[in-house]
Image 1 (cartoon, rainbow, N blue to C red):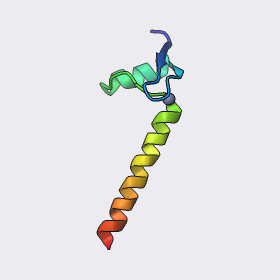
Image 2 (image 1 turned 90 degrees about the horizontal axis):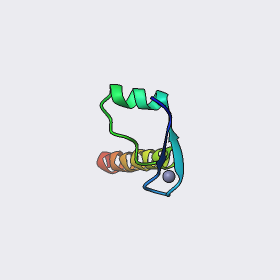
Image 3 (image 1 turned 180 degrees about the horizontal axis):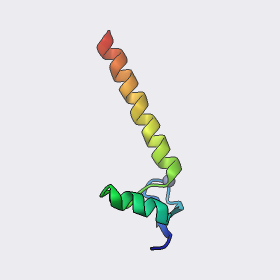
Image 4 (image 1 turned 45 degrees about the horizontal axis):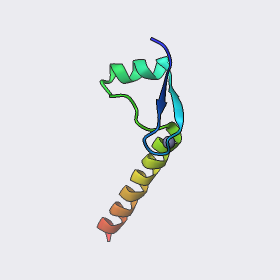
Length: 60
Ligand SMILES: [Zn+2]
């Protein structure tokens, strides 16, 4: 295996899908990442923010 250069679907930036990451993804049966790390982190934060808001609403 070797590092792969992938293009982010979100912002179009190229990013490296390292051998280490590929092994991790293979072990977990994940498909190749579509987004670069900054975009993934941003989406994760959005998800958390949405969940927090949801919990807040439910508790009220
Ligand atoms: Zn991106």
